[in-house]
Length: 153
Image (spheres, rainbow, N blue to C red):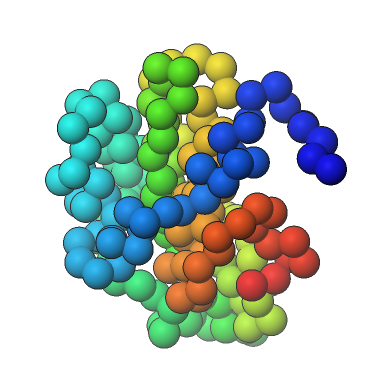
C-alpha cells in the first residue's frame, strides 16, 4: 500500500523522477550539463539548469568512481549529479553532491535547486540528482525509490 506524504509528489512515486534514458546517454558522451543544454528546446528550463550549475560551481568532470580521496582516516568517493524537470508549468534544476565511504554509506553533502514557478516543483528533481551523483561516485545506477532503502549502495 502506498501512503502519500505530500499532496502532489505522485510523479516521484510513479518513477518519473528517477533518472531515465537521458542519463544513460550522458555516460556515452558529453557531460550532464552540456548534454542537457544541447538537447533542451525549452529556454526557461535551460536557463534554470545553467543557474543551478553556476550556483553549484559545476565543472565538467569525468566519473570519479575510480578515484577516491583519503579524508578523516577513510576512503571517500565524491559524486556530483544534475537533474531537470517540469511540473505544472514550473521548471527546476537540481545539482547534488554525495560522499560514499568504503562501507557504501551515502551522505548527501550539498543540494542546489533553483526553480521557476511555485509550489512543490523543486522536489521533483532532488531524487534524480542524488541518484546521478551516487552513480558518479560509485558507478552504480539507482533506478527505484526509495533510492537507498538500507542506507548503503
